[in-house]
Image (cartoon, rainbow, N blue to C red):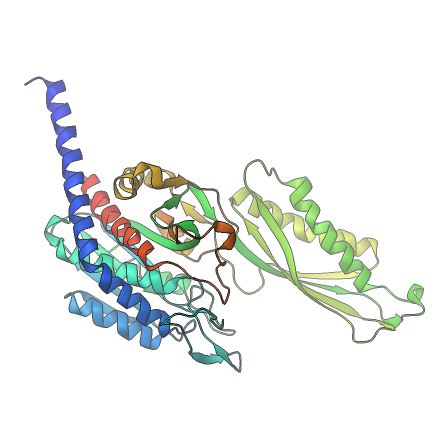
Length: 432
């Protein structure tokens, strides 16, 4: 047999092998779908806030131990990590799901509706999985069961990471992916690549969205304090007015995005979310405090805004005879959720085999943020959006994430389970 014929035969064999594996994963995903849905319903009905996912962690731990996995608990307070060792040499693939709910009161009429409450910043608040983290956990629990059952087809190790506090740790605490990384979650065994996904209430069930490079934005909160001179509101010429100065600062900040950034490359956002100053209608106050957020999708834009924001604010303040104090970042910041280009190229065939070419969508980035980005800073990673919108609901009518009406279709989870499983196996088999 000639060299060319041998090469073609090898390619056909590899393609057939991948197809057989994908069929096996699909069959297993079908067989456990009812369990995945039951897990999701339990988790949805029993949400817990960031860094308080104690019962959630026990629920996840029980399942992982039932699979015979090596399980570690208490990572970054409530995180759960399990390792599946195939017993054969190969890479270590990490799969991640987030665990925390939000202080949101659910209004959906579901048999598994959340009625839970919890303590949040000194108040009793309703709690809901209003961003789909319940589905993320259920999908990863399903992938763990499938991959454990296919252990003989794996090469290397799989690390299942159930992460707390993706929505942000309570005030005065730290948590989430950043702390998990600091505590060595990507070590022992050393992780080679990491995969994660997010359910999307605005994407049809059965579809998956991907993007090379930045798929979600970096987030950099900031605080600006404008200091002036207090005076009677009837005599503004005796003041150095921090309110008027702040108004000019707010408008001036927008020119950084509209006039200094190359928006053909990627979008960027600078938003002021809170402004406080004064206490009477007839007193020009001494100072005004503003807090806001910066969202960027590439490091050049992020670095430019870090330089431009203080320049712009201080320049406007100087022109008004006021002083400006700037804190950037304020209390936390997330990097860009950045899909490694080479790894994304490598995994695209897995997406197509799993979902079908017509259901794989090259997506635009979003200016929301994800602390999955802390894992991607350390190792190559791919983050995907998986459809959770019922086909009979229009995108315009689908409730947004982080709202009381947020809802996703259980049937969307099966694709997520298959994607996590197939990407893991395909990556292992692609590494010599």
